[in-house]
Length: 333
Image (tube, rainbow, N blue to C red; front, side):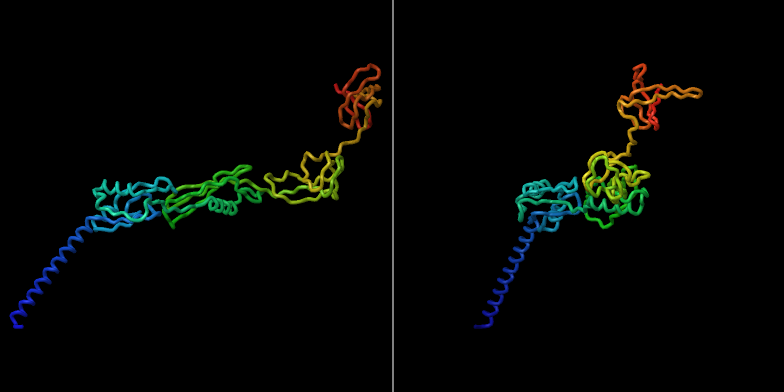
């Protein structure tokens, strides 16, 4: 083969190579142009966001041309208005929002889930957290020296903070105190600003003593040290002033063993009956300078100091008279 033919073949090959290379460049440009004008959007099943405002870029993965991706990412999808609220976004909604912003359905390929559930990242301060803070405050700042401890009687609601913040601070103060209740306010601060508060109510608990029966005690028994024991208890009310063991009091009814004594269960021992019903008594009227006596008949039993009905034997009149310790009676005028 001569040199002229070899040269001709080489030139032909070079021309063909150049043609193929140019075609490849044109195809790549066409592909790049096509990619720049279409979007591929992947929709996950569930997304948690920090902000309350939703955009397509927050809830999906978008691929395509840089300018088109930026445009699609900024499309708004709504707002979470209540802490804990969940928003569901389906494919038709996504396509509709894209179309409203000039990106037709023909340029979009959706992949992934049929619906996206969107929720906001929240930080929750529980009711127990507020009770602990308020209880610690009451321990450090006793409101009443007689109270042994303060017991929470009303639980506050949880406090939900949208987003995640590390700069959370609390401040406690005593709002009010009464005989049977105290209230502590816990203020919540974030970023140096007060964002809310919760209040915890407390009831007082007192250390008291009570008498408990050791054995079954019949009605009318005078209580002695062998009948009861003294125990320490926690009460909602302070111990009565001058409290002392109920020794020497008489039971008003039968009391089983292990019964905590209450004031209505016992009482003072009544004095003995001095005047009995149908007994003859001396009616005495004594004033400075004179003394009058008469015979009467008691219509009722009577103890010293009590007032009973007495019939005058001579006149048959019924009078009220006070029983004296010596057994005589003195009319009441």
